[in-house]
Length: 392
Image (tube, rainbow, N blue to C red; front, side, top):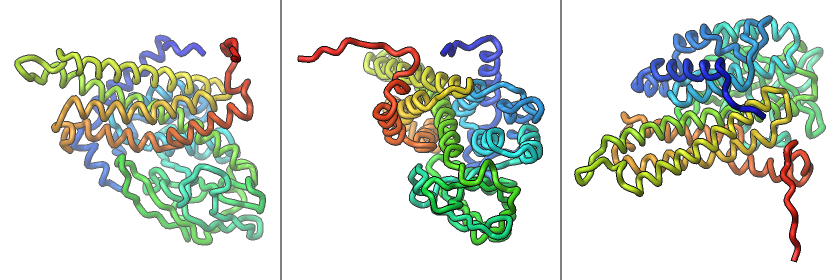
């Protein structure tokens, strides 16, 4: 696919980068890590005013009618500025899930409020086992009259403390894939939330459902058809987390280049040393590869095409290369990189957290291996390069 930025896309990226540089001070970003909401409400409102909360929604729901590629550019810029926001929980997860599978009443009620920055939503998928698979979903939704009663525990629920509602995936029948999404108000009787400690400073929560009453109109999508929706949610999340990792890597490289230009050792800037130059070149190379893979994945998903291969490649590469890039940045900086008030330490932990989200490198490689075994033509893509096989 053509992933060359056109004039409008280049403007979106530049404006998002400018916003991210000025939105919050490093001290404020650090302070938000201890805040239950985990983000600055005024900054989120400004982002919504710029149209970013509705960038992937049609205009009839208050959106701008753009797409995943443009959202990926915004996510990359926010990662570069380390700006915390409920963009993933509210737009990437809940918003796009509702856009894909919600009823017209659900879309009409929630999507304009999300686009305007007036509602925070999130999804509850992972459970204490931590694995990403339909068999690992133990939360149970039992029939109760026309509705359901839901019980179970979910972990790593993004921004649950600020959410008006949580869309939860639960087992609704005996079959392995008989799973259903339910929209549950955050103040529903029997729902409890507890903030978790997170390596990247995100607002992640444990959410417990104790016999929570769920009416029939709270079902999102069809009963028993929740897992394919979960797979696509994870796919979108992986592609966009790869874009965030690119932003983290860009910020780490920028800090390193500036330090190499200004740090003097033996009477010369350390950037004049060949070993430092080699490290910086390798960092730039890996960053460029990650950016192209992330853009490709976002563009393909945004075009409504099968993006499993592209998203898995982008996330697998970024989940390994960007944390490694931040470690190299620490090596070049030396001790100053480990100071809490120096931003490189922040990016290092953000990289670790982003690498684990929506499937780490190992998970993505297993997805690629499964695709190679199960559907080689799909794995090779539309523009395959057939090479002769020489057998001895």
